[in-house]
Amino acid sequence: MRFVRYSLAVLIIVAAFGVANAEDNKDTLYQVSTIGALMQGVYDGAVSFGELKQHGDFGIGTFDSLDGEMVALDGGFYGIGTDGKAYPVDETAKTPFSVVTFFEADKIVRLDKPMAYGELTQYLDTLLPTKNIFYAIKIEGTFKYVKTRSVPRQAKPYQPLLEVTKNQSVFEFRNVEGTVVGFWFPQYMEKVNVPGYHLHFITKDRNGGGHVLDCEPANVTVEIDDTRDFFMVLPSDAEFNKVNLEKDTRAELAQAEQNTNGHR
Image (cartoon, rainbow, N blue to C red; front, top):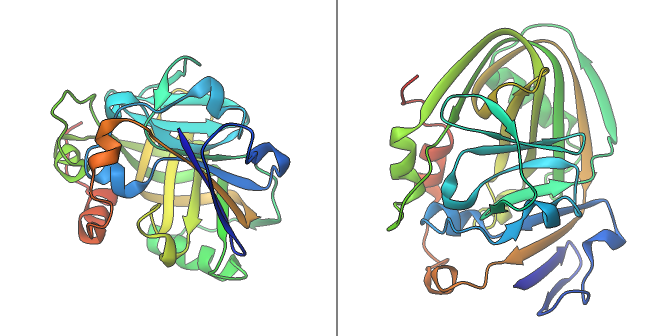
């Protein structure tokens, strides 16, 4: 596998384990592959979850063959399938795309009034001191409403992500306790990760969740972890090598991220 180490000051590309080490600084986002590759159907697992756990205890992602949504919280890794149920992840399972970090809050804010999803993201914007770095975001407490999705396991030849989300399963949670887990990425990272907010949800009892399509917090605590370092593992398989990462997938990504169609 190839590794890419990025910070606001320097870009380093290396070719072997040990040359760049994400554990040297736990205030680092560790990512497997790129959102551009995932959008175009590069779904084969590249890194095991046993390895991924060495680089973070908090994060989101997916599984080999795009088999559901992943949530990592407090060191536990969970998969949400097309039934909306959460299950523990086997360390031998692999991921084609994930982002994790060791979560340590730099800002904690109590939010005790209901608000719509658009109002929530606008409020979160006011808590970010700069739009030039990365943020891990945790929102924990009681939600009036959460709408999530998961996607079914895919078979080759893989379809692009936008086509896959047309067959997604959608779930609704009302008056539920749980945690929203995710990240905010700057616009300049649009071919690497989802620009803006990319959020997943898991219930307090760790029984359900998914990729967040909509949510209305009622009484929650918002925690934000400011992060300036970014470390990326690039797959070494033929599918990744031949995919065109210069392709502009912004419109497709926006539609896939907030596609509310699906079945229950």
